Image (cartoon, rainbow, N blue to C red):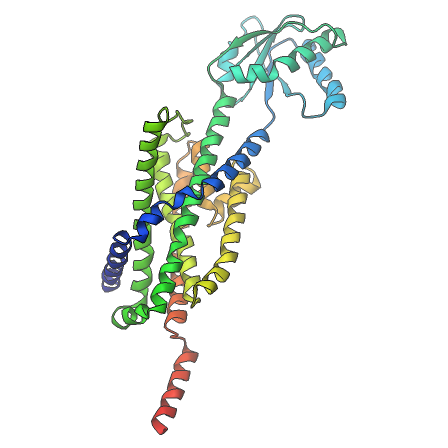
Amino acid sequence: MKETLRAAFVIGRRDFTAIIFSKAFFFFLLGPLFPLVVALIAGNLGKELAENRDTPVIGVMMDEQQADQLIKARETLSKQMGPNYFAEIKLVDIDNYDALPDPQSLLTNSDINYAVILSGSLEKPILTGTENSLRQLNASVALLSGYASNAQSTNLPAVQTNRVKSSANRVKDLRQTTGQAGMIILFMLTTLLAGMVLSNLVEEKSNKIIEILAASIPMDAVFIGKIFAMLVMAFVGIIVWSTMAYIGVSIWGTGIPNLPTPAVGWPIFLILGVIYFSMSYLMLASLFLGIGAMAATVREVQTLSMPATMLQMVVFFIAIFGANKLGEPIEMFASIFPFSSPLAMLSRAAQVDILWHHGIAIIGQAFFAILILRIGVTMFRRNVMKSGSGNKKKHKFFGLLARNA
């Protein structure tokens, strides 16, 4: 085992040095310019997902009679204007009406998750919430209040508004945005960088370099060395791209924007991003390297890798669809399924501050990555060197024919 790791280090250092100091590596660093089109498409997808988020909830802090009138008004008008036209209405549970709670304290309570708080009366409603929530719900609250108090929508009451800086509902939306951005970046980097092992392997197979390496060191070391050399090269590319992006924004932009802070905080979120990228890369690159071992030409590589790439797209859409449905079956499946688990768990890190979930997920991903590595090594050995038992018999048969001749 020790000699295998030492040989893998030699192969990894050889591949890493050959790639980094090649002219092609410069053009590789320009590669992310082309996926910007994919990023725009993914951004539109994220926008549609944002529009389809949970229906906002209006917390009503009135007496039960007026609240019932408001709920009945919503039910009546929803039949005419559509079920999704009005926000959901819930009566705030108040034990003592002589000491009403501060509406802003209710908005910052993540366990309740109200978008706005409606207080006052039907004749003089008071709406408390963020600027975006007030702009979105002001007109519908006025319509509901007027209909509930007068049974008609001709004389609508003026809604008094109280703005607050943030609410639990707003923080939830922002964290979902951070999670979606992290998933898109992780998917793009993994797909872009993992595919490079295919072309590298086909080139060495065509030049008979693989046979020379296999004659002197174990095939396991060749496989592992190539995988980790490409992983280190991927991190070099990410560092260069991040530096270029920071310099570009600093020179031509207005500075790095204030992105929504993830639930676990930026330091832990970035550390988890590095770990999940490594796990996703090891699994996908091992799969691609195993596929590349079965191909002899670039055309065969493209043919064999197409199904794997399409399945990876399906995995991405499953993960991003479940990102806004924490605790639901689709999100749980995406978090458990090995190939989508890094994406789904990174999104979960942006929305939930529980860390032990990530410990279990990382252990599971590591075991599966080792399994894929072992399967990849077997495919690599069998297809590159033709070391299967059937091929050994074939070689012995042709050897006997050569000697008899």
